[in-house]
Image (cartoon, rainbow over all chains, first blue to last red; front, side):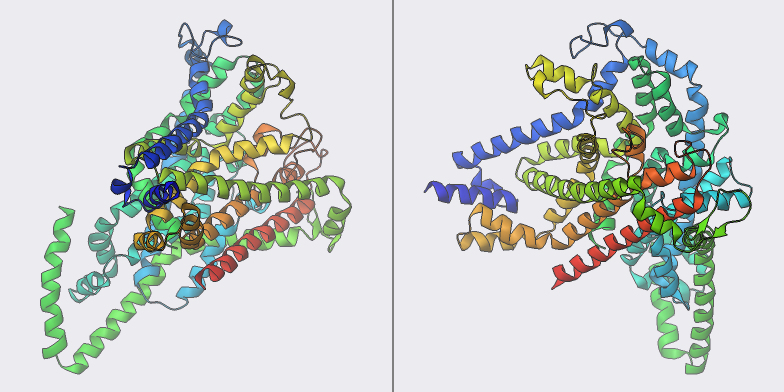
Length: 298
Length: 330
């Protein structure tokens, strides 16, 4: 009897749909509560470091160590210090410029190529496609030496344009891969119909196809924004001029500088994650659907 | 407004196809088809040209150059000196390279296991609780994944701080002072401490992939299993797991690749220290080429040899995925 209850409860819960019939049984309900509490504990533990980060950034400097978890008094002093003493605004703007330029570049290249691979027939299509996919397995660390030399020979070292070029070329193939998967879900008749309607290929792409790809584009934009904003190794290597640095290398150098001034350090970190959290919250729905599309279906 | 475009096109297209299909002479249709095909070919080439040019300049050629440089000795000045496989034989004898190799493999394998099993369990459990709660928890669990490795590395460095860090002070407060450690400066613990941070950042993303996979499992399979009297464990083992085989293969290979190429996290938190105890291929090749720690002269040739090794390992990860996917499809 008890075994039967347990079975029904678990079966229903893992199946999802039969939940209504199972939730009437007290045993299954109890089990659900246990799982829920366990998951709540895991989530609390996961989010704890970030809560701690924000709380530390608003503490008065003399109450950082040994105080209670929640600060008894609150100050934004650390934010003012972090902002003014690190020239935060400049680096923030650098990050924003580099990220936006990269996102635009990646979206243009990835949609054009993704569309071509999904719907057009042209010679050497598969060879080019497979070659581009090689990029997906090339970690940024392993190409850092030749890429540094390459930028040097183009005179793009220590330039934000050079950094954007590296970002676009290293991530456009993945975005292309996502967009191709998306374009393949669109009805092919649409293209053929537009073609017979004697619209040029570029017109078809721009007027007929592109407006339909908003969800796919949203996914690419979020992925690209997050990864470019957070990128560290290229930014740390390619740029030498302090005024041109985006945020990540600057945050890294803050550690040595503010080793004991934790509120200032935490304030800097907190300010740096505001844009990614904003993008995440704003476009979260697309994120999940994009993940399913990109990772699971391919 | 944008939706209007396609709505107008569809009926027009229906008429146009009618015309070309039944009434127009065959010759005209053929010529037209040929012209269309040509414009399609040209458009195809034009559309993939920008991405291909960037690929050749910033991926393809650099790969070849890395392989070539790995066979040379070069400080970045003058011209590279061809030395054959000398860099690779040097690697075998270099004790730091040995540590980096062990650490990279250790990190890649353990992070893959942890970052596959833990998110899978959480995803399965999340699927058993109330929908609203599940949405909230998924959102929370994902947040560490959107924070970059610089931020999470610095943050965890503060948490791990031996004297003032939250971890050790909390241990003291709950009366477990004996468990206090120097998390990042103890050579035996440092890789484990890094693994925890890696797991912390990776749970959300992998959990989401598994969750999406579970949502796609055919519900009738569970119903059939229940009719047959399968236990909860049996259902998990014989329905959930087999249905998630391809998803799992993807998660495993993604984690394996991320493990082989690990750099940011280690560089930010320990820079390979203490005394190379947490050195991985990524940090070692970086310090050889750009760091001042490995002597004053950049060793681009020797560094490139590590690049080639990392590339080879990542190709292995892709092979693993192809192999697992093929096994899963069978």
